[in-house]
Length: 372
Image 1 (cartoon, rainbow, N blue to C red):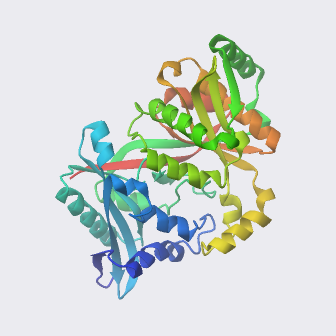
Image 2 (spheres, rainbow, N blue to C red):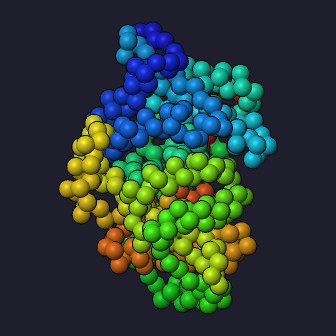
Image 3 (spheres, rainbow, N blue to C red):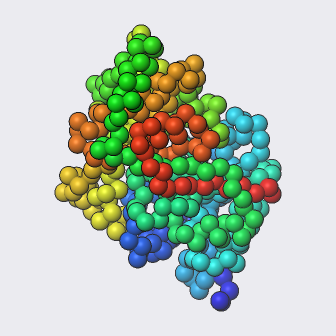
């Protein structure tokens, strides 16, 4: 193949090229769902995305004869390194034609940037963090991704592994069907856990949204603090996420678990807006809104995107009951299917809960790492 060059993203034109590349690369993939361009812009905007208030990133483009053939981001998440007392840098936003030398050159540039910042390992993909789109799809290419999950060509794993990056952790996605979720044994077990822990469940109060978000934020940061790779979200990050999700959330599917009046856990499920957005091939906002409005009835799946309980309740079975209660509410609203994602491969309690609800593990995502 002819020669190519790698350069940093420096101008608005470069940023547009960085974003436009995915729409060209995936144009003929029947399972790809075009994200809204405005969301892609906001994700990498260092002024609008509060993630960059504590972290840094450099973006790179690979070009041949003026045409983009690859891209990558090198990310230093200072809050991650403070939380875990390490010097792990991240790569993200990786997209590339199926050419190993192009991929190698992109990873080399990311590595150089991370080394210049004092990092001694490179992990990813993270777009740009564990609290955003995370992991590389390695299994389950026969169906589109659900809302806020990643998607990529199968050959990416080969490009990444040939560079020397190795598996660090796998993330699982389970698909569940309302026809098989409910069993008598599971129902009885849930009732026992409810009574034993004085558990009650309610939906988020949208009229008290700001205060509800504050309470949920406290539980979220406490519940996930001991999870592998977890990084507490700053107030600005959490508020920005809540503002974005408020536009698409089903209040009935934001479930709060309480014990004797105290919030001890919560679960957030989102309608799979990727189902209508699949028709919006160019990622435009007006087209996206049109498809969301005219094809809303096609949405028959919701994704359990976040679910957890306070550390002192982790062994109580409360998380499993919360899982179940979301399924019950989702059925009442009319959702036939649910995806629970992502779940760490070694999160025994949550994997057991998904399996107890007859969930089928149907997609696997991988986080890679390499010492640098």
